[in-house]
Image 1 (cartoon, rainbow, N blue to C red):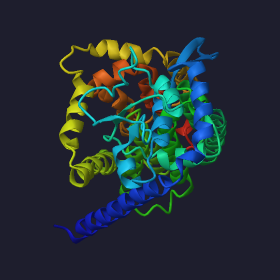
Image 2: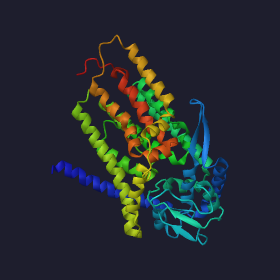
Image 3: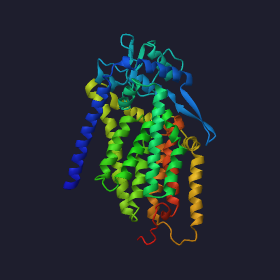
Image 4: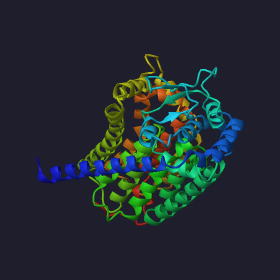
Length: 441
């Protein structure tokens, strides 16, 4: 084996081990926060969510539709944060129980191959009701949700010690707005107004500035924006783009609930290709190598981090979590044998993004009409990276049909990649950058 490749593999293994140790350490430390410090804000949050119901409805004026936001999962996240038992901190964060109340809980059900259940006192699955009853010591059945890392706890537990969910939402929306403005300014500086517009319309088109309303969906966009900003600022100083995407994959799995994880790959990759093509046209070979390097390392970071959680649970606490989780992956893909129409999956997701997709495509079409007199066009290899990125969400939907159909109210956000990259692929590259590169070879 080539010494350089072996060196990079060993470096990746070392980084992986150190990051996993950091993940576990952070979860352990935040689990030491006494639950009594969270009690007031958890009760206030439970009341707020109860008034809003499991599905918070928000009218989106620029689409003229009412969107559904996932209070259901937000309640689960707050419940998990509140159910940490500080007397067994490591065990608590690894098993990730909900509805757990010391000296009151009578039964604890382990994670299984199915949807996460609610207590038998409820007729329907009711996460908000469970949170309210847990906060008020009125529930006896607890359930483990150990298949995920629940890394969001390192932020949520400290914040719940100070704020209720409404204040947390305001903080999140403010941070998203700041990150969005920074990204827009950098895209404007590094590329052109058209590039910046395509990105911002794409983000607005998937309710980027509303995502802070939902704890469940925010972390993939935090990772995507922060990574994109990092690549734009450090474009000449990034020593290994492979290591960058490897760690992005790890952080995505640690923090996310399988919402729209490919966004953390596709948005930074789009920016990386724009940077690489700023001075020259990439060859087909170079494009393939970039996709292979970033795709494989992101996927390895994401998947190995996930499998590591299952393996640690099996080893430390004698659970059969690897088998259970793999069964859950199959369930999310096939729906346990149910016949899911791919066209229905596409329709349910595309429904939410027709307007922003049309706007970005129309802008690109208008630019091309304006550019008809020019004899210079993008070489096809200039377009290929963005065409490939644009179809990634459709591949995702074909693999996770069950998940993408039942959760279309948030999985449609995968299509931010399509909204951004289709117009980039359509127009002459001169409009993507400040400087005309007519003589580029």
